[in-house]
Length: 404
Image (cartoon, rainbow, N blue to C red):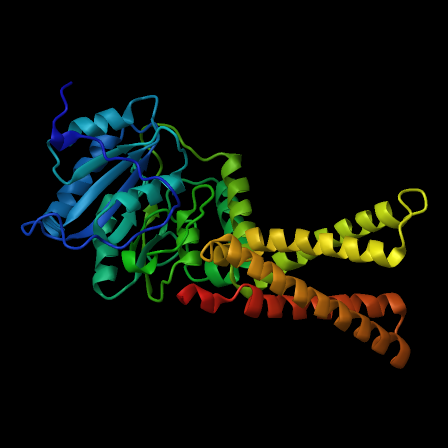
């Protein structure tokens, strides 16, 4: 087949999964802005791809003539879904196709499609026809009313599932309840956080470093984006007519891992949990090094000297993990050896101050208030952990530095 410019494949974006602003100006003065970029992630959807493209094009040609684009992102399907979609491009001028060879996964496919898009509003729909295409116009209506996001939901008026077994219904609701327990501030924002059919304004996720896991891209967008106004539209989830289901037990495991990862990464509570875990690893470093240096059966060095070396190695361990993990998002935007050394020195001073505070609190609780020495030590450690975390967030990894 001789490919012309009109049906060449879109290049696959690389690098971090971040959405950029639209380029200005547009490619030509005659080129109208794209209002909606709708991504259709595919894998082994050869039987459905022509039908979904035809139905979506018919709807959007009338609602948004020449102001939309359809982008199929295929993960190198063995049934040549990408090739079938590519052959449709001359008939559907708003259609583009991306073939990914080195990456896999629905969520990352959606984001790669958004990265290559030109739309002011970004959307996603499954290719298997389980998401009714005609609902697009209602979702678009919510955006037109001022919504920052419009979500197709099975759990509002007009929503439901067609032929699900009791077990599948139980698993779906159970997953949602689990999400509300682990990540209530995110999952509770919509009635159907498991939905894979939605639109969001580009401005809501520009510059956000997305890190999805599994199929639930909506949760990632809700968690990391800035989405004040959300509209929901009810729909009935249909059974697949062609092809095979991609849902496996692995998807439930990925969903749980995604929730936990977001819980650890969002806001001061997530940072504090990571800071505490890193500190716990430092305790092991301190104890092991102290033993190796000071124990009579090993090197037998003086206790004070051994403790200083052990503490410093534990501090360096903690700094490296905190710089990479706890405050990694901030550290990556403050690159350079000089900046890292500056953070290390501050971290060292704060930890030294925390050590002094720990000793003072321990003596106060034990000698003045008569609290059991081990209970007093735990209270002192907890208080100093909070103190160290707060000071490091304000001084070692200063959020205000990001504005420089």
